[in-house]
Structure formats: C-alpha cells, structure tokens
Amino acid sequence: MQRYLIVTADDFGLHESINVAVEQANRIGILTAASLMVSGPAARDAVERARRLPTLNVGLHLVVADGQSTLRHCDIPLIAGADGFMDGDLWWRAVKIFAHRKARRQLESEIHAQFAAFARTGLVLDHVNVHKHLHLHPTILSILLRIGREYGMRAVRIPAEPLWFAHRAGRVRGATDTLLLRPWVAQMKHRVRSAGLFHNDRIYGIAASGKMDEEHLLAILERLPEGVSEIYSHPAAPTTATITPAMRTYRHAEELSALTSSRVVAAAAALNPFRGGYSGVMRSLGRSPA
Image (cartoon, rainbow, N blue to C red; front, side, top):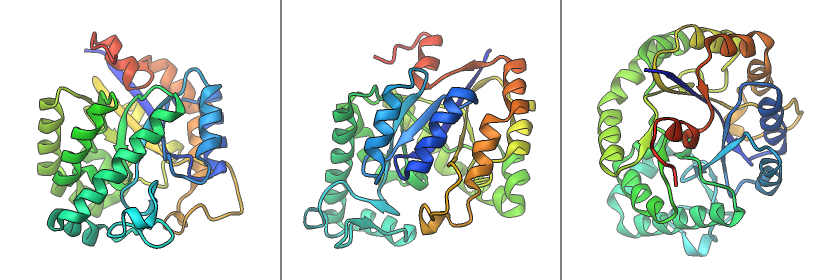
C-alpha cells in the first residue's frame, strides 16, 4: 500500500499572521491543506489567499468552544457569551451539550451557520474537523455527521495519534491521553465509516500542539507508515501580538520554520508519498470526492 501524506495548518483565518504562514508554507514548504475558521477575525483575508493558492486544500475548522460564534448571542445564548465568544471550559460544555436539549439545538444552529459560511466562500470543501477535537464527543459527532452531509462533507479528521509519537512529544501524559482516548477514537472511526465518509488512518500533532518543530517533523517522516497520515500544526509568521490567550505558549514561528525547512522538504521528497488534501487522496484511491 502507498503512503499518503496530508500536512495541515489549523486555525486558518484566526489571525493574519497565521494566514501569512499558511501561504508561505504552501508555496515553499510541505503544507498541503488548511482548516478555515469561518468566524475568525482574519477569515476574509484567509479566503482571498486561498483563492490564489491552487495547491492549498481548504477544509472547515468548526468551532464549538474557545472561539467566536457565527450567530449572534441572542440566537445561541446557552453556548455563547454576550460578545459571541464560546468559552474554553471543555468539560462543562460537553456536559451541557449532552444534557441540555436547548443547548444542543443552539449548537446545531451554529454548526449549520458555519457550514453555510464556508459554502458562501466558494471554496471546495476538502475536509472537516473540530477545534480542540471536540467531535470526539458523541453528541457533537452526531450533529456534525447529519449537518455535514447537507453541505457535501466527504472527509472527517480522526484524532488517532500513534503511541510512539504521543510519548515522544508528550512523555507520560501524552501517552496516557492517547491510550485513554482509544475507545472514543475507535467508536468515532466506526461511525464515520458507517456514514460513508472518508477519514485519515492516523494523525500527528496532538501531543506536540504548539511545538511541531523540525525535529518532530523529521522523526515523523522517518517512520511514516503506509496508509493515510495527517500532520497538523499551528504556524504563524513572527508577530508581537498574542494570537489568543490559549496559545500564549505556542511556538508558532518555529512551526512555520519547520514546515519550510530545507531538511524537511528534502526528507518528504525522498520519501515520495502521495501529498495533497483529503480530496486528492480520495481520488488517488478511487473514491470520488464529488
């Protein structure tokens, strides 16, 4: 079986420095995809850049926590604050969505609105994933699968990180988190496949979130297995601004340097996997993304 490699930048549209990094990493580095935050402050700039990057595959980065909503607060008061911000208390949000019917309905409305906003960009929907991987939550996944099909969703990211990389990047905690998530990941894979949708076999970047440097990328490429692998990171051009408080420890510029590193570019070229987005992988495997 062939190796397939998708290299993605998340949070496209959150900040102009991220958009600049995405463009640079796609033009001169190994970046092949980006996940768009449609309600991000720099979303319009991201879309304009994407339109002039023919090899960049753009998907939807759904935000249901720790980010700006698309709808007004008055439409979704149970999941967004007065300023439209959906807080980052992931545990409480997960409980509320499971137990509160009105909160679930408001979440459905917000997810609908984000899919619709992506459709209005005119970009081809390459894939869908969720900020903080909250589609591991069975209720959120159910809503995503139901609404996504209405908008032509064909591929969903599965956050299944290999144990060796989780331990390398996150030591004991990284490995423990990966093991604890395995039952949820297995259920998620089953549900996505049952819905007739495509997904990656594995992903790299969870335990190294905010610190996907050159060393990590080279280690991944050295051990890249057959099948569909996705590497994701959070690159940004150097800036004095804090992109978000939740990312204050992220080494964005290092991640951009890693994606454009001559050593990484050479290692990927020598490995010679199929490189592109989810749509390209599907076509290569004979599964039409249309």
